[in-house]
Length: 497
Ligand SMILES: [Zn+2]
Image 1 (cartoon, helix red, strand yellow):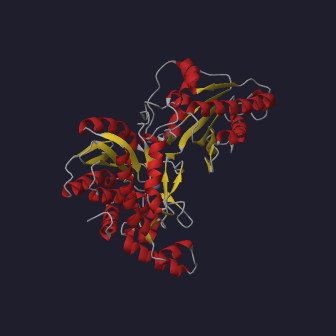
Image 2 (image 1 turned 135 degrees about the vertical axis):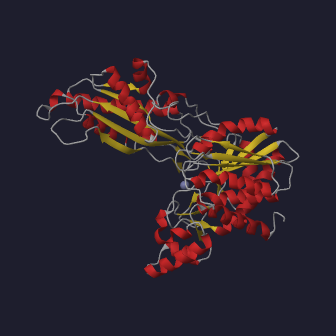
Image 3 (image 1 turned 90 degrees about the vertical axis):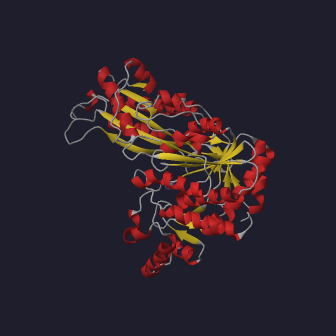
């Protein structure tokens, strides 16, 4: 088999269908069993050097798999992607076919025809270019393209294939894998030159936004505000500070703030938006709410976490000023690290069955209560795992890759907009110290190493409607083009040295 043969695309298709047929929904036994199955598959292909390393100690022990195809050179290109998928109950009566793309596609076509309305999805499927299947687009077709390329590659570079678990929930797989890459470099005697993430890209148009090489990945920080007010009877509202009202001033200040949205050329990082706003009351009475908890999604290109937090404190200051003047009361504004400094003790471990922001709220509440804080106070912090903004720094490497993908008419994009595991592998715009010190559950509910700092890009399949029963892959690109693109990039990176 050669890299130009139609066999290569047939092989990519075959592997994609095989991997899709192995169930691997996040948090299930399928996810835990997947890497061992993949390891067997590689052994069968004669790739003997592999490491299966555990990620967590849940009842279903999850792991990542790294497999090496050793070349004459120690220069190494890493191909990586996640293998977990979202559940498939959204397929309803077709759930039994969710992991059988060919049969599923036929059934979906008849379901859509019966419904009588002409839809984008039906047109796509009828064109013969799109293939349905849970996890096929997101993202086993990407893994398959990488595997097919690796099988056929006959150059001198070494290729390390890294399949990671849990991307869909908390990126536990990539968070564990990033520091492991350093030790694998030593253990196997490798020099990692580039990491290619194989994540899928959504494109509702003709595919020109999907056929891309991406040189970085957007960062994500979850900003939080814990409002500690002063409860009062609603007949005497001026005797207190209504936490729900202060939260509303904060919401008004942050929502879609242009100061917290970044632009790079034509690419815009979406402005902040609140994902949650609730006060602490659980029932009805005429007492005003004592506390409120608000958090916002924020996205970054180049801005450091420290800069984001400074801007957030400025926003919060303006909101608090308005609240002070309306209520006629003094209200403190502090960061979580300042609150923690007043407290001094270590924090209790949180119930890990709760989500990270809720654990962060409870940890903050525990300190506020143990301090017996009487003055109304707004505490700003972060409430979940940060995704670092990363970007490939080496301009000459960028140029070499752009040239290599040109014959396949791929465009280039600065930032992967969909948030990805690249955040843990790539070259970050800032360190995580400000986030670490202002996240109440850092080190207790999760740990996170600094991003590994490798040159990292994304090249993956494209399609439409991820996480939906109409999830569909553009098959000609994924099977015919993508493996060849990967081989061209590997060659170009190796030649560059
Ligand atoms: Zn996904």
